[in-house]
Image (cartoon, rainbow, N blue to C red; front, side, top):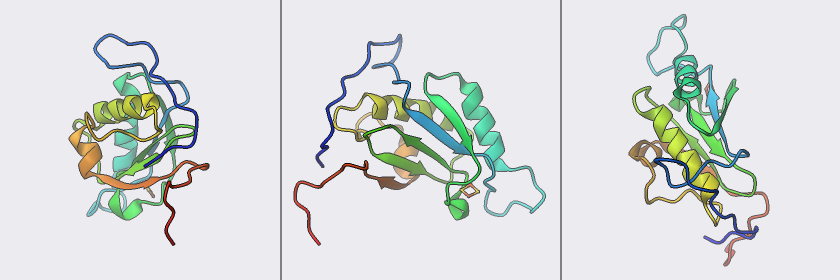
Length: 145
Ligand code: FES
């Protein structure tokens, strides 16, 4: 994988982390996701996840969204940054996910090539990745039809 945008250097270290999260890195959390098997009138699992992520207190900006079109595999969240790949995650549990999303945002936000590194990525962000979307200006080194 090769990025065609200007490399980004990690911002200064924060205590206990490799680097701070750049302010343009965002965690989107779907508030309307249901969990598979939930009754139609059950409280939305996505709302609980969104509240937990927002209340976690990490550095990344958290934004609520009504749907990420990953409804069958919710609860869902995404991590994005300008000039970088976008990552969508599904079937997220409350336990551990807020911290994992903050770590993922930190890794993506500080990445020099715009991709979230596999090394250091929390397990839930490996196991539960649904898709990744290239940055707008991405052109593969060797394009094949
Ligand atoms: S309702 Fe959450 S992804 Fe559609």
